[in-house]
Figure 1: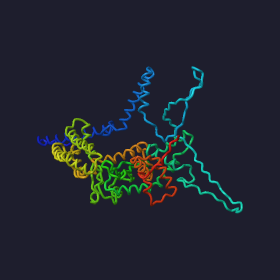
Figure 2: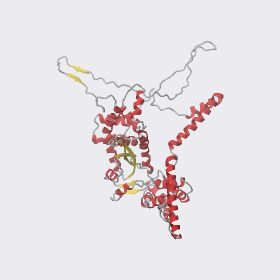
Figure 3: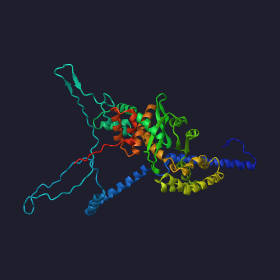
Figure 4: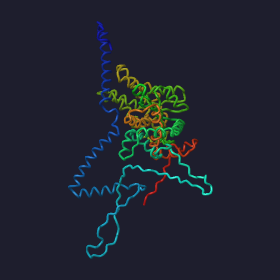
Length: 509
């Protein structure tokens, strides 16, 4: 933008050119302001987040339940009808839950007619779900000592069982509960300490932190082995997010990074179990993914971050880019006001996603064939259309930036057309980033670089367990117990989350 103090040219053509440039710059700045306003005051996701949608549904359902309660009070017939529907639709409660029987009997077993004795002819049974708030209990370990009456110096005693916190009070299950509460349920340690104090158990935050640190050290070999298994795949997703870390020397936080590397072959029927590994790094430099992915050969699906390009230059890695990021840039423009070019771009990209939704779950060859027949014509028409529109808009505008973004990555954006194993976007790993963002929001920052590494280690195991339908608490309690008991390091594959097999629970009669 020119300096207002500069003299204006007298040539009309030069004035027109200057005016056109000023208008383009003005429009670009207006667009930036709209984006900042939307970032500050509007929702940031392209679509309504599921959590927000569920929150709205919860409120609506609560209001409806209140209305039903009023009707039930006024009309017993409606109350009985709704009760019958609940009994028919609620299903059965899990068989492994303990049953506490409650017998509701009549006070007098004398026949009101003949005064004879009544006998049982049957009964009605109903089950309701009851909850006992989380309770602490003390596991008392007794180790008797034995002596010989003939040999006075002989004393025999069973060795003390191994413990994660030697001389400490927690069982391995207690430590697992703390880990899951912090890294899966996003409860910082000081809040957990407050919850425990309400039940009369005083556990200082520093004590809980000591347990977490010991568990992270113990579980680190599993984290490393899991990442090795992921790198042995020929296709991964990668993303990264900020991890604020306390910087005591400067009295403030610094910005670390949590890199996420994920595998999920379920959309095309792959047999490898899904998993995600987080790695903490003090910065976002390109050296980090280079170091992390040493030895990886295959396709890496990423966003537009330039740090991954160094991997592609080694010829061992092919980059597949993300259409969701392309769509997001046009979406931002369309949301800010009338934008016919951005709106049409969204419509064309939506056609690609419609095709993807129809072929999800099919074999790689079927997906590739469908993409060649249906998606390639859309892609082939989109590129020249974008190039044509680019010549019609100011090169300094946000729309020009949105158009140049896919054009600069076109080969990687088209890679999914020729390989049915490749997804159209990197949403798999972005979903794995969301729990990290939630934890960051609640905990605000990690206490140190070491805390960032603990975060990465435990979050890796928890999120991979969740991807495989495994209860993170049961898995971590089992893994910690087995390692403390001396599980061989050479058999770490048995401790990976997807290898965990829960112990069957017997129903209580």
